[in-house]
Image (cartoon, rainbow, N blue to C red; front, side, top):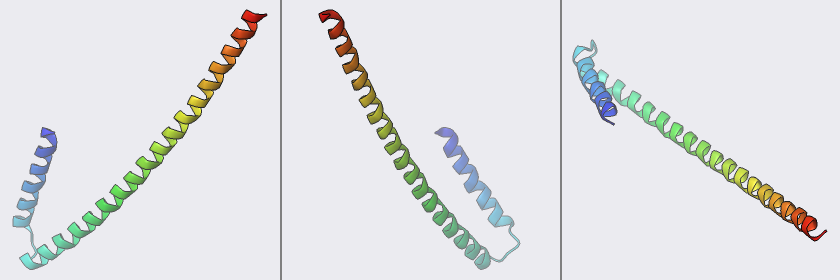
Length: 90
């Protein structure tokens, strides 16, 4: 977690230095930053939605796999019990 905050601090410091060193006037630079930030926000929103959809799909697949394996285990248990009963009663 400390590394993540250090990374964010680096981004902030780098962004500040970049603003000081930019060849564009302030109003133009602020407009570019605003546009790029809006694009980044849209990208993150879409990526988050895609990630959520993938997680839901994987959860459903896992649930289906568990249900099918539970059915197979129950069938195997019943078959083993019947075989044992037949062997003992024979």
